[in-house]
Length: 163
Image 1 (cartoon, one colour):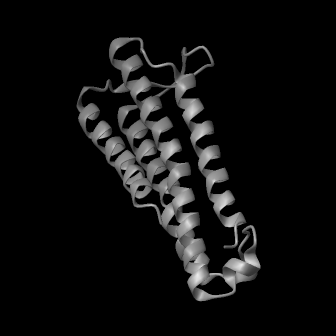
Image 2 (cartoon, one colour):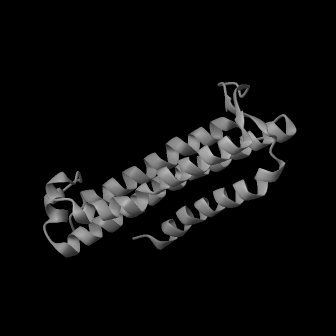
């Protein structure tokens, strides 16, 4: 397992928690929470419901990283969809290596998603507090696409090799 990737992923979660804790007190009670493709607000909610939904998303999405490894240890090998599955699931030591690779891959994927969330949350704060934002929300969407795709291919490439 890639330790640096684990720490970046955990760090992104910490940034989201700090971001919410610091911003909550100065968010307006009624917030713009949905935006059209041009960045104009077109949906509203209360501050509390916005933050609770945000926390729920963070928890639900990021819980998949540790759950993936646990599922791979519990499920029969036939239910695991990996390149070269027979090789990786044939021995306990190889299975552990495969679980480490998949866990690292998931950490990288969700690091990209978390960066997107950090940027989109900041965009929402900026629009609600200042009325505008310097953050282009397409940058956040780009992180949500490019980084996860990179780490998915990275992990699949490592699993595609058998020695």
